[in-house]
Every structure is written in C-alpha cells, then in structure tokens.
Length: 358
Image (cartoon, rainbow, N blue to C red; front, top):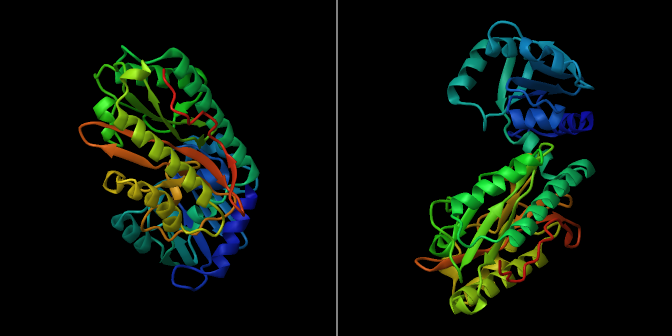
C-alpha cells in the first residue's frame, strides 16, 4: 500500500486545489486512511508529504498500528485535534469535504506553524482507478453475490414477505463471513415502482416482478448487482411487465456498450437514457445510470445526466438503468464492470439477465 502513498505524494507536488503545490496532506477520512494504510480502526489519520509517510492514532490502536508497513507510526496523547495540529508544518492540505467548518476552524487556530489549504478529493481521485489486487477483491465479492442470486432463484420467493427474503439474504452473507455492502432491496409488485423501496411486510405473490438489488462487502471491498426476477406462472405476468423488462435490458446492454476509457459519464448515461426515452418511458427513469464501486458502495465516477467525469481504464462502475411505473411495477438491471481502454474489460456480474421465473 506504500505505492498508493507514493502516488498521492506525487500529486501533492503537482497541484493543489488553487493550482499551487502543497507541502503535505492531512488525511482524516477513515475510508481514505484504510485505502492508504489498511488500517480499519475508529481513530486514525495520515500525514503525507514528499519525504514522510506518518500514520497517527491513539493508544488503543498502538499494537495494531505497529504492523503497518512503510509508515512512521506516532501515537497521539491528549487531545486528538491538538495532537494532529501540532504536527503540521508549511502549506498543509486537509480534507475539507470530510471536515466540519468548526473542526476546520479549530485546526487552523491550533496549527500555528501551518497554512491550512482546502484539498478535498485528493485520495478519492486515486481510489477511482483500482489496482490488480482491488479488482480481484471486488471480483470475489461479486462472485459471492452471483452465488447468492443462484440460491435465491432455486429457493423461490412466492408466499414469503419481502422482509423475510431480505432476512434470508442478509443471513446467508453473514454465514459466509461477509456483510451486506448496503441494505438489500427486495421490491415486489407495485413496490417495484420505488427505486429504493425498503423490504416490508408485503407477501410476494404469483405472476409479478421482484427487483432484488444487493451486494456484499468482503475483505473490505463492495459488490453491487440488481436483477429483476419474475414469479410464475408465466401466463399471469402482465404484458406491461414484460415490455418494460425488455426495454430495460436493451438499455443495460446499450449502456455497457458505451463504457470505455475516455467516455464522459453524461454521454454513457445518454446512450441508455435515449433508448428508454424512445420507447416512451423517459419520465420513468429518474436516476443516474451508474456509479463507481470500491471500498464504498458509491464512489466516483458517476454516470448520470450532469456527470463530467471522464472514465479511466481500471475503474469499476455499475450500469443500472431502470423503468418505474407508479401504481404498477418496476424493473432495474445492474451489472458491475471493469472499464477498459476500448470497452468493458470485464463484467463481474455473471447472473443471467434473461427474464427468469422463480
């Protein structure tokens, strides 16, 4: 992980948020701290400069911190904020997008020998492109999610409540030593018209669609996949459900076809959105097409109507168009893919996207 800190240090010497170099960066967001060091406790910070890599924590984590390779470890005693401030020198960036105004003001008052510069997003920019180890960890989480979809399809859902299905999914993840990367969505029938419906007491019946959106967090990294399944008998499924499923599937495939290094997030979104709009359901697709996934379930880049993010090879993004018809039903189909130079390098979601009856 020291290579990540080296890349960060190089960025600091090139430009800060005001287009001038900064001497060091204080990293306090715990997800960013984990990315740089592997530390997963509740109190830690990193101070990165061209010459030094300093990891800071308190007495509770002294033993754990001793195992962090490539970093000087310092234990802060007394007040945490004052302990951090006393170590800052020169033009020091801080993560203003993760720090309250009050904390920023306190840091400035306590850091007598430093000029604090707003420098949020530095580590997040590095996190966008995954290294080989990260890709394999996310692939392992995705494979576990795919396995769970297979078990769900075999098990069936008719006669169970959404909450019962959710409980079974979550329990299986934990039995495998993983955690949900976000609370699963199980939305049946008319509840499918709500993109982020919460599983509730509604009993899943025959002849309806059930949207299941889930992922696991395994070895620190997240997966994310959505499949909309159908309950039998096939003859009872409404023609509208079949129609919007077919349109959503085509939009998913079109979106996947637009993903490549150099593509702009809004342009990829528009490819899928145009297909849905031309089918007459433009008003029924109200969210962005996708987002990055990594240590967190929602990361940069974004695929959406206003996104200016330029995709880079090695990023991992979702492609998840949906159509939601109020009072009727809804469909979302989501794949998790690795961005390549000339297209999708690898689709990590292998569960069939053909309309599947359970």
